[in-house]
Image (cartoon, rainbow over all chains, first blue to last red; front, side):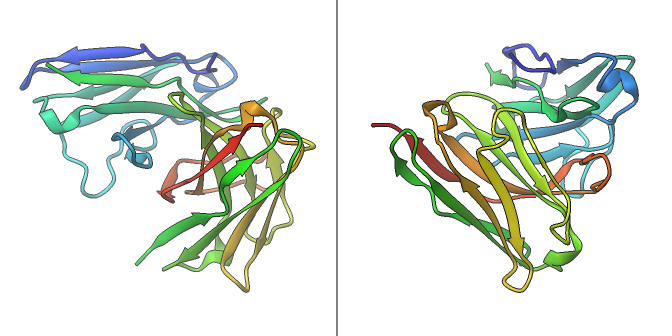
Length: 110
Length: 125
């Protein structure tokens, strides 16, 4: 069981908007630690998608956005494309456990 | 080109040992902390360990503490993970990853901005 809770799966049709939630607690997200997001395509290493709650690395389309409030964070993907089908993970820091990840969310593009 | 390349994975019996390596290139290796992150088959990501740029500060997940040892050789631009007393639940792809920042006093690590391709460790009899 992961310290950060994500829905196991989400889905959407091409062009639609989907969101993935990441719920933590007062010892990680709620303590003010940043949340980061990764995209993992099948058979590949994770790729940084969002850092510092809402910042996009160079090369990441602006269709991807992140936000954080209280003990939770969210990743939003607009204009869904077939190539977005992947697993998505949130990550933060926990004052007792060090680096923590969410359990991952599988995005299916219908 | 900035990259990390892991090696050393394989099949090992329960109770056995294995040493993973991660060769870094394209950046000043000694200036950065490094980490190991693993992913069991079909499962999510799990942070394993971190080490400061000098090697003087190390942190471990409770699941591996006392069994795994992280180290580095800055003259060879290489990160290591010595894994002893291996268990079936250690079966995973092991990634080396570079955190954006690191606090040697608390072990705080930021986001991981560079990942290797991973090496598979299978613990089975």
